[in-house]
Length: 119
Length: 108
Image 1 (cartoon, each protein chain N blue to C red):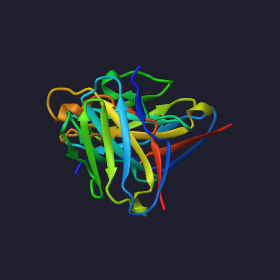
Image 2: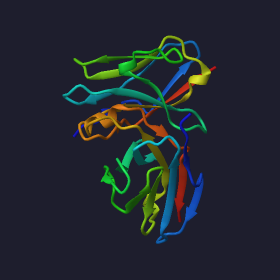
Image 3: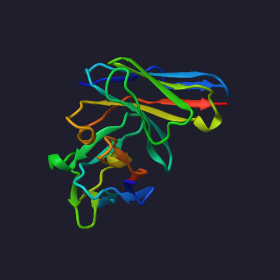
């Protein structure tokens, strides 16, 4: 049974703080993803990673960075939190398939989410 | 840019009524289409995908390439079907493209 865990369910931070969101998966998946989930906007991809130390920008990378030092762990960093980053953050992982496009053909397994509030 | 559109934010039906959640995609290739579901206080999970052609929890979805649609259907809705449903499409960039989501509310 695939398990994707996120370090916090709820987090409250102040504007300007540096925020770390951690995600760990235990199924040896190469692919890992960070999304934010907002009502009416669906899931929007922030960053993703196909391998250790690899990262690719998603659709909304501004104000975020990521770190993937180990295969099982993918961290999302808010360098200077702002109120418009208040959201639900979801981490996901998946097995890869050969080829970039094919990687999106596999099921993604999601973590429980972190509800971040920036005051 | 590739896009997935779910036109309804909220769909409210009575228990036992048929359900159809609409999804349209814009991808000229041969995408893989998915439906993900998020029940209250649970994590987002895969409900079904086109390639497997399975019926999960009574739900089915047919890919219509002519209309570029992948609507999710169930003949008789149950209260436990109440959830947020997301349609998603594979893409040529390796990213999964999600729709805006539809909340299904099944009333007793």
